[in-house]
Length: 75
Image 1: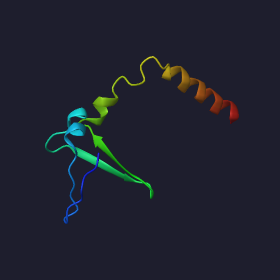
Image 2: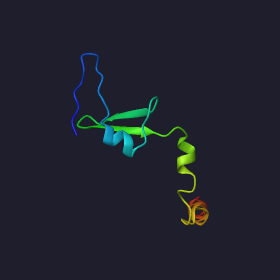
Image 3: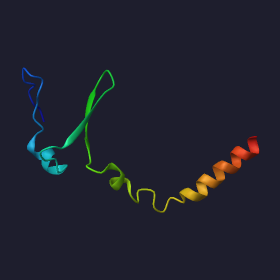
Image 4: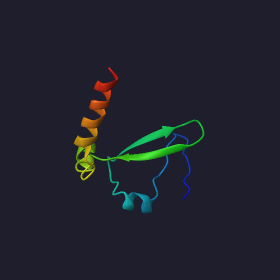
């Protein structure tokens, strides 16, 4: 999809993208510029809530304890 930049530096988020990502009035977007490309990333209203449960089933406590043991063994 393509949009045009206005004289004031504004652009429009195409409707299919707004609908897919549930972006409405007041939605926040982060612009990432790596020097070659620009990425626009929607910021959820509560970023912490979005991450809730993302590590479920990953045995993160076990991995943390193993890493701490390795650290102790190196000291």
